[in-house]
Each structure stands twice: as structure tokens, then as C-alpha cells.
Length: 591
Ligand code: FEO
Ligand code: CA
Ligand code: CA
Ligand code: CA
Image (cartoon, rainbow, N blue to C red):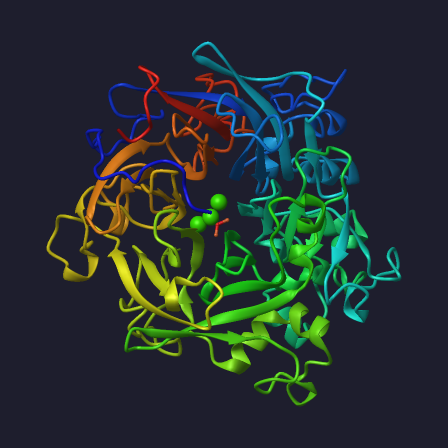
């Protein structure tokens, strides 16, 4: 939706250097403070368990505490419907878990209870946050506080509800799924709901028998060293519960203002490895949702609702994502593009290609996109819509080391770099500036990479701060574009990334090609999750997996990790955390 704040014309802070320090660094004049860490109490009334640094919190305690691996996040002002910038809710994802850190004795003595603790450490947190003077705090207890886990009941909505492929012994009608998981990026709607996106769910399910075409297309695991839930919980063994994987890979809508509401999995938005869901409103008030499928050579999608957004009718808006048309993007080499509809009966999407009906097609979204000939991209991650330029959209393509390899898709105009280890950011403008339009034009905002060195293929096209593996992407209300990086922990400051430091956050104003480094994270982490208060004076971000790639914490002979952030306690564990960032003078972030 259009911003009420004036568009920024320049960045006001001084770019900071790269860093290998085990801390969060921001420019002079800014303050960054971790304030909601894995294991901190979420704020349930009468249930405020303290974090135990040796990993000994119980399964039940974990369900009342922040989960692991914070990711996407959104702000919701309190009271509901207002624009408060000093009191609100944060809804955030806990993407995945680290079994080695979650328990006192790691994966030894594996049990159903251990799997359950892991399930309680994934999903979503809703916390109430408030500014007292200059200091932000989590309100505990709070009537809004909530943890959604891998066992929270959720309703299925849309064309795949009641589909035969959605039915299991525990849910013979295909209506109610237990839980959400691998919640990566997110979206939020103008009617005040949170969208959480199920990304690497295929890692959870294990199949030992022969895989069918659908399981192969989505990469169901056959590995014994996954999360091991399948060993103790039949739901995650595909051999025993063959349709359970079909009930994951969706966008889930959560009403953070109603802690008793049942989350809904909206099948009309397709089943992929959903990175995020960027929502905007078309001129005729239909809702448009942009979504990336984060895997090598996967696609970019958009959903256009059938019904129209009505700012005065929240109850009606809550059903907008239940019906509409899903499209997949084709980027032509001449800079034009088209949204190809994924509609049963059109373009070969019928029983001759294995699609029995629309619900069946949506469960097999990737296979439908293959049939219509969409463009295979370099790992689509977050998408952001410019609040000051209607129909202008950006998408991070994080990297793809297989681009151009023998037997893989060759380079094309939209994915122009072979062995694309640094990634790039796409930009498109919808026809007539209408997000619901069937066509668009596109260009590349920036090729990520180095600003020094001899290798032409490793050169970034930006001026200023070098970066690679862009992932989190969001506009603030002033139209500054914030980019967060997720260089994998095996490559941080090494190999092609040598000298580029820890993961970071940079800012740009599109059109300037000037990039400034705003934040560097602790060792081993990625930076992800972005939420601004409506006045642009507070920024919340998440630090995910600090210390990844470090030593085994459960090995008593090896007690130090590569990171002890944020507690600085070498006998403890590094903890993913939300960080609150303000200016010391209370000013606007980015100035
Ligand atoms: Fe969970 Fe594509 O990052
Ligand atoms: Ca991501
Ligand atoms: Ca990533
Ligand atoms: Ca991640």
C-alpha cells in the first residue's frame, strides 16, 4: 500500500566497513540491542519459563519460549487498526532447528519427546512489544502472546481443501493440518494479518521406498541424518503417511490480534518451497501476492484474488486469499515478461499432463509451471513492492552455482551469470503500473559481487558497499530498499567471498546505484527479517543461526563456538535473536 511518509532522496548514514567481529555493528549514532532470543519467554500468562543455557529446558517449556532460527517478521500496531509506532505486536518465524544445540546431550538417546521439543521450537511467535521512554521491551505476560508450532491445528482453504491427495488417516476429509514448519520469509496484509511461508518442508519428511514423480519434483528426503522426527513420529515418515507432505508447502494466514484464531493454509496460493509473500493492492482493489520458490532453477509466482479488498470490512477481507488465480513468470530475453496462468484446463494443464482438477494442480504447482514454460530463476528469495512507485517490484535471486553447468539450464537475459555465486536483484514494472496486469517489463537492479579484484565475473555492478547472496528484501515507508545477505556459513569470508566479512545489511534508493552498509552481524549468522514501525524510527531485524559452522557445543572437549552471540557466555549457546535498532537521537532510520 502507498506510504504516508515522503520519499527519501538520499541516505544519511556513513557506510560501515566489513566485519568479522562476533557482534552486531551499526553506524555511529545508531543503537542495536538483541531483545527476543531463542528460549526467552514468549509471554504466556502464568507460563514464563527461563532459558537454560545448557539446553535443558523441557519440551513443554520450549512451547512457551521463543523458537530457534528467527526469520521473517512483521509489525502490527496496537490498538488494532491504528498507526501506533511505540506499541504493537511482532509476528515472526522460527524457520528450523539445530538438534545439536536444542538438547543438553544433542541427539543421543533419541526419543519422541526430543522430536516434540524440536516441533515446539519451530513455527511462529507473536509477541507484544512496547517502548518505555527510549527502551523497547517485550510485554510479559501479554493477552496476545502466542506460539504456533508444528502441532497447532490449521484449516485448509481453497481448491485443494478436501482433495484426495490431502487426506490422511488422521484427517479423512482433508480439512485440518497439524502445524506449520520451516517458516522462512513472510508477508503481511493491509487488513492486519501475518503470512508465514513454508519453505524447506521437504527436509523433514523421509521416504525409504521408491519415490513417485511428485515426491521427486519436490525433493522429499531419503536421508537418515535429517531431523529424525520420522523415526519416532509416523506423520513424518512418507512410507507410513504418504499424503502428509502434500499438506505442507503453503502460505499460512495468521490473525495476530486474535490469539484464539485458527491459522489457515491457503492452497489457492500454490504449493512450492515458499520463501515469502509480498502483498499489494491493485487499482481495482483486488489483492496481489508475489512469491518466490527458493531452489535452484525454480520460479516466481503471483496470486490475484477474485474478490476485492474493502478497507471497511475486515471480516470479508479475511477470505480474500481463499480464491483467485495463480500465475508464474516468464522473463523474455527482450526485457518483456508475461504472467502465465496456472488454471486447470488451460495451456495443457489437464489430465493429459496429470492434473485431475484445480486442487490437484495446486498441490503439483511446480509441475504445472514446468508445463507452461516459466523461466527458471537463480533461487528466488524475497520480493518487495516499492511503496512510492505503483507496480514496481524487486526480487532477490540469491545465487545459483549450477547456472550454465553442463546438463543444467544455460544463462539467459534474466539470469545472465554462469556459476552465479553472488546472485542479483531483479526488477519489473507491471503493465500500466497495475499489479494485476498480465504483462510486465523487467531489468536487473544490481548484479551482486565484489567491488575489487580482477575477476570480471565476480564484479558487482553497485557503487559503494560490496555484497553477495542477497536474501531479505524490504522497503521502508520512505522508499529506501534494505537488503539482507545470507552467504552460506561454509563460504562466509572464504573462497569467492574472501575478505567480504560476516553477513550484512545494506541500503539503497533504487535509481541511484549507491549502496551503503548499515549493519554487520556476528559470526556464522545470516541477517533476515525486517519490520519498521510506521514512523520509520524503529527497525527490527533478526539474526539467524549465529555460530553456524562452529564447533560442536555438545562436545565437552570443545566448549567454545565460533560465536557466543548474544550472551557472550562461552559456556552457553549462541542464540538467534530479534534485534531492535533505533537512532540515539530518536530520529528516522536511514537519515
Ligand atoms: Fe529460508 Fe530461502 O531462505
Ligand atoms: Ca531466506
Ligand atoms: Ca537464503
Ligand atoms: Ca536461513
